[in-house]
Length: 212
Image 1: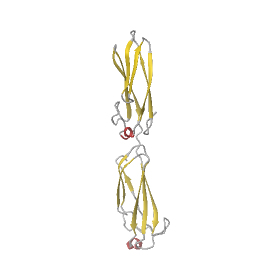
Image 2: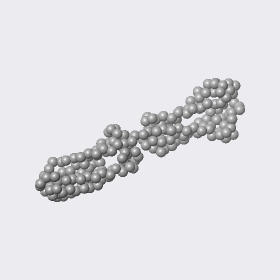
Image 3: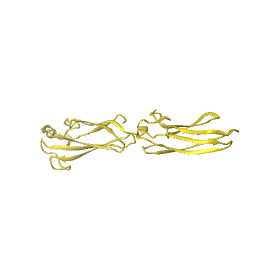
Image 4: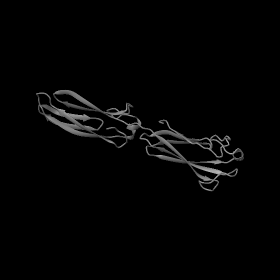
């Protein structure tokens, strides 16, 4: 399987085997990522011992797109993990496993008109001075924390800094535009406030982040 969310639990099964002809004493199994420090004791020739260990994925692991065997971000796209076994009679032996990380930053934006000239969202512009009110919502629809999120809206002059947005998080801001006589005279303006004669007030908001 793949890791795609904070809280995902990775379960490891670690087995040590005495593949020699000497009883091994003070056998231990360690696994830094899971915090495992397991004492096996003696292991007779041909004997095996199995232990289970788990690691709970942190949001930082996904944000960093990978961690090493000590839990430090390395950006290699997976969760690295190495277990080590030792005994009084042998050198340390190690075995590693990797679990891939799904790195999926997604930023969505939704903009709606909530009022036009005091007549609600279905109102129409019919006079200079009418105020159009917009509600703009950004949503983190991915699994990566988005940083330095911004919302801009040239027509209203909005230049809004959101900051960090956790997976599933939303942020809403309101912006307004006051209709000018030139907008009506020209029968419409574009998103930059320039006359385009298309019969309406066009407006586009844009969201951005470091990850998208």
